[in-house]
Image (tube, rainbow, N blue to C red):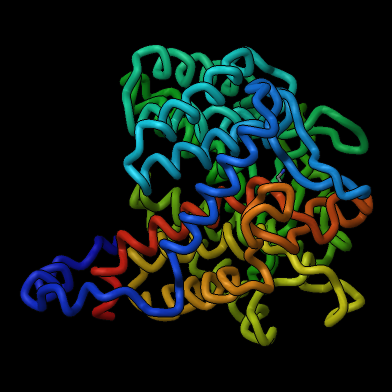
Length: 395
Ligand code: GLY
């Protein structure tokens, strides 16, 4: 097990404020000022707290969703993150108002997205303000999500639609942080057990020999055997969908935080090494939507994959024995995301922060658009960067 290095922390304490200087090329304050402007303008123009921004539609108009959509928790999460950055009660109140409209999802059993919906909204809110009601919603949501776990397969079922039989997709890993949190909040270890079992099943089949990832693992629910490893949002069953690879980096680094199991740390490093090998070939490092897209270098980019990976790489850099490459990978991505090429100006981009993300290219859906979850992971990565920078500056 690789614990964080106390000697480096000690060195930092001895080095004093000079070591705490931020890299000059990641303008955290500028992005937070932009987020305040964009979200204030959005809330003024779209005051209905039951409709959440997701993306831009083909005609250029804003796409709003109800709480049932898998992306519904991200906007509330963005407001909580803004509250954390600014310390302002006004953002806390706005975040709470958006969060509380999502409560009904604690009973939703027809998909696996409760981690995204509830943990990024109620979970963020609970971390900052601890309302008992939020704890109740989180625990009910974790109980509901757990109903999609099959001990025979050893995993939580992702989707209920054809052509899949018992699909387990890579971003299902993101639910596991929610389940670990539920065990800590309730003292009931069942949720952590489900999370570890799911992670072990995922680890067995997710990676190819070169540590690129499959998007979908489809199981036979009667036998628990893998039927097929395939894609849904990527270019082909044998290609590497870049956001899937980013979820794997983030997911396995998070699993190591929750378990200290070195197998998860190794998996996160392998996933990251593959991702960085691909993105280091791209001048601005921002991944194409699929690393094997046939029209590279003209293929659309996915800024959401870059933001998720940046946040995951920053966490990984805390645990890895050789952290420099992961830290530099993260800051390389953030530096590009914070340039005018990817970062919107106030009053544009339907009030989102990032441009040039891609949701589901094979369906020609959400191609080269803003996506609310790209902004969520950008804000999280900037928070991790700002707060871990003292530690990482010495590496
Ligand atoms: N469903 C999560 C994603 O599209 O990445």
